[in-house]
Amino acid sequence: MQPWIECVPNFSEGRRPEVVARIASVIEQAEDVALLGVESDPDHNRAVITIAGHPEPVLEAVWQACRVAVSLIDLRSHAGVHPRIGAVDVVPFVAGPGVTVAECIQLAERFGQRLWRELGIPVYLYGRAARRPDRRRLAAIRRGGFEALQTEISLPERAPDIGEARLHPTAGATAVGVRPPLVAFNVLLRTNDLELARRIARNVRETGGGLVNVQAMGFSLASRGMVQVSMNLLDPVRTPLYRVLELIRVEAARQGVAVAGTELIGLLPLRALLASAAHYLGLERLRPEDILEWNLVHQLGSESTELKWRWPDGTGNFGT
Amino acid sequence: MQPWIECVPNFSEGRRPEVVARIASVIEQAEDVALLGVESDPDHNRAVITIAGHPEPVLEAVWQACRVAVSLIDLRSHAGVHPRIGAVDVVPFVAGPGVTVAECIQLAERFGQRLWRELGIPVYLYGRAARRPDRRRLAAIRRGGFEALQTEISLPERAPDIGEARLHPTAGATAVGVRPPLVAFNVLLRTNDLELARRIARNVRETGGGLVNVQAMGFSLASRGMVQVSMNLLDPVRTPLYRVLELIRVEAARQGVAVAGTELIGLLPLRALLASAAHYLGLERLRPEDILEWNLVHQLGSESTELKWRWPDGTGNFGT
Image (cartoon, rainbow over all chains, first blue to last red; front, side, top):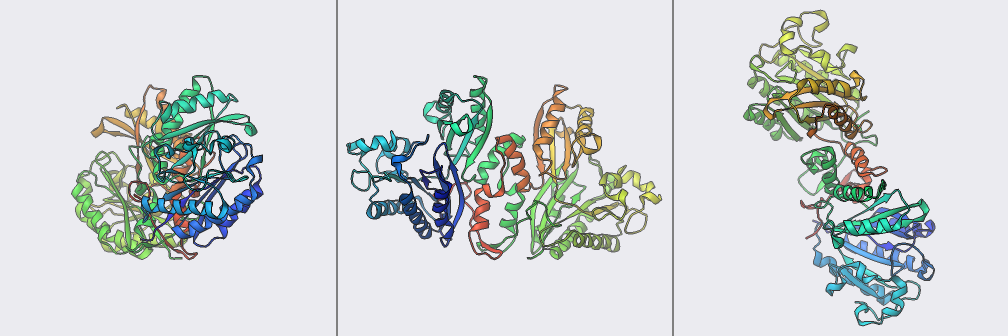
């Protein structure tokens, strides 16, 4: 089985679409990698690019994208509601089939070494790649953001894992790590009360007495006149989207505030979708094999890992 | 592009699992066809088998399965809540990619001819294969079931499309047709009031002043002590499951009755799943490309229709 990985770099740019497009085009033009998604938000002033492919091509493509990002993004003039420490803020690697977490950690360390060696960007290793327990979580690494790190990077507890204790003047620092696939899910609330969004975020996240596997923050979205509970769902199959959404709905209703909508950042794993859909549709359960197209990939074709695949046409109906 | 079709034969047996298993095993053992699902219900006394593959192998496999079914099922001793006219009650063909509806109709007619020629079973052509407007809908063809057809088959308006106007003594008649992919969806109501289920079925279906693209009947499920609104959703993307479910919930609540659960018979097309999931999750929309695995099939690999495919492991998490 050929190995493959996912990489989901986050860049501190969400207001200049042309910059985001240039970064993404590096991935598009790269051989042997798939650009799975590009999302950006002007309030967060952040872009998230989802990439998958075999390890070496992904590493190279993400490296080239980071070089472009560093040349175009100056953190000294960056304002946005999402905490960040770098122009390339986070580079998470996700182990796919055929790749162990240990191998993924090695990729992360190689990537981090290259960021320091070739661009002079200090690196913090997080998640499964963390060298210290207090580096597992991103929140600890980026506390106070780029601005606080200017002075605090020289403190022992904030020393980078790779490189010297000095920020790149315009690109700051970068967190590089390994994590399981997560779902980034935002819930929009029909209010401009930022304090409410922050309170709800605290109530629903694991560290606030809420749902396990949930990280959450409250944001104000000035461009939309509303607030947002922005979340990472670390296990969207065991702690599904519906459970989080309905809990937020309850918490917001207490203040007479309605959910205005939701959004996904990046991709949704099929089993995560099925877990929530089964709940809402009243089905005992939904498994991948209950979905027509899953069977067509899985069953038709030879027993080897090369399968002949035919997707239904764009209307969702077969034939003409 | 290689052509393929789906076939979803319905047999009048749901109480003897060994009989259903023997019919299904014919499909399992057939070359070049995929057995996608087997469902049966003792109250309906009916089994539904979902098959896909290239046209000729599917035709042959379904034929062999019907031969076995005819040898094992005697309609004279068949009792069940679902209306039926034959041991092999309905054989619907669904055109897949690379197959036109016209080609599918030819397959249906060939299959019908063979049922008459080799087994002496008269055939009604329905759906897109209907030769007369009043044969498009199954309800008209099977009105009064096997019992009524005994006498009425000699009436001009009930004459079969293929074969002479006489029923096979134990296998009755068979409806063979062509239709788009539909979703069979049942909603269980926490009551034993059959009249309520029938009334709700009437209210939500197209012919009763309800939702377009919905066929519905009310059934009593003695084995579960509850009633069921049993439906065919003819366009589960434009008229999604959630719209039907929520309307039933409203209609049932009027009598203080709750929805006890739901079930899918056969497979759910991905876009049908996405239409309902987006509604419940509050997402603006969900497209196939928002689902991680869809991208992996679609993007990784060569530009030809042969794609290298790697599924995530069974836990839904990548790597180890």
